[in-house]
Length: 129
Image 1 (cartoon, helix red, strand yellow):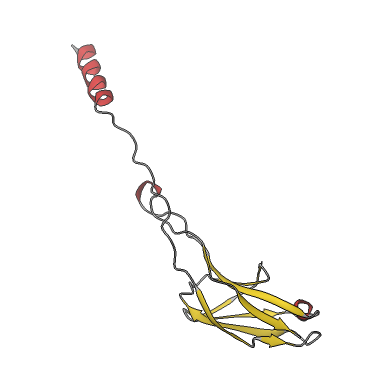
Image 2 (cartoon, rainbow, N blue to C red):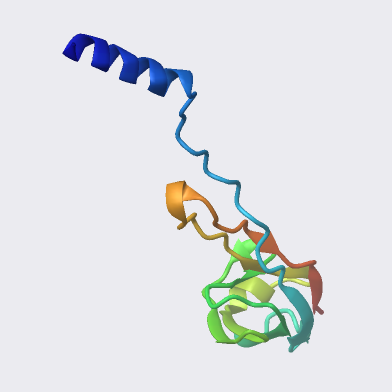
């Protein structure tokens, strides 16, 4: 009788098609928007300076990118970030692209669901004369 009960239970479980729930894909994160760079220009050969990036939707772990390189960034508020730009970054004349990245966050929900994708702002130009 035990064998028949076990077989019936196994058939019931297998017949119902039980499967582990799948994790959902990450959802879009907050897309940062840069509205102003302060300063927005420098002279080649000047000393390093603090760059202030004003905008919207900055996460507390957002990062300023200088020509694609992540910079040590200080979060001031959801609308302002700062970073120390070294003199070596403005040694030569040219245009530099500045963006802000809100990094994605790992899933934290049940079965690994949720999480957000990394989002990057549109580039803004910083001029080195």
